[in-house]
Length: 282
Image (cartoon, rainbow, N blue to C red):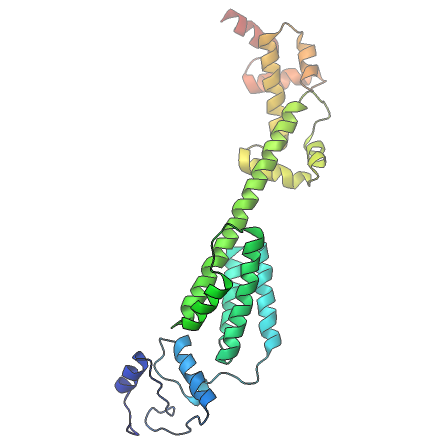
């Protein structure tokens, strides 16, 4: 090969995955790496960065590398993954991958395998039915890859999928909890002590949190839902029985009859007595 090489020729070599070693001015072959390891590392750079057409000795990965920093970034990734927040988890993964790409290729392979084993075990433990590459399949994918970008894309994809699965699981559990709250209120509607705090204590949750969660699913706070169920029960008793209004009020958990009249009229547009008379006429 001539000692003079233009960029077009260099690009041709790069596109056919040939190793071209040159000085930073692209004209002379100076400061050639003189070990097989350096030649291997230059070729691996080509795998890592397919959009770059040439590399010099200055591009070689660091030999003295701070692995403590890499481990911290890995731990941060798993912390964010456990929180199931996609944007934070993906950002942490990107930070890790950017750091790991600065080390020698053999170490890079080791750390990619290391992080994937941990990810795989998380999926196996929590979502065993969700299909991800086995550890051996990932190792093969990593060893045969022509671009580390495809590996990063795969890790980003399963990170996003994991966060979605966790969120769906969380939504399902929250919805079940709110259904149980509904049932508990219906079964205890006659209790005058039934309040959002009592409900929250029964389910061992913070009252503000539980009410906010309940409203998220049913568009009513627990307090408003209790009142609505009391008045619905009163309405039904007015129609189905001849019980005095005072007894109906007490049966629905409202001990102050005057207050019951006020609430009922505000909700239905008529007093309990008027409502019963109107129903009988129809």
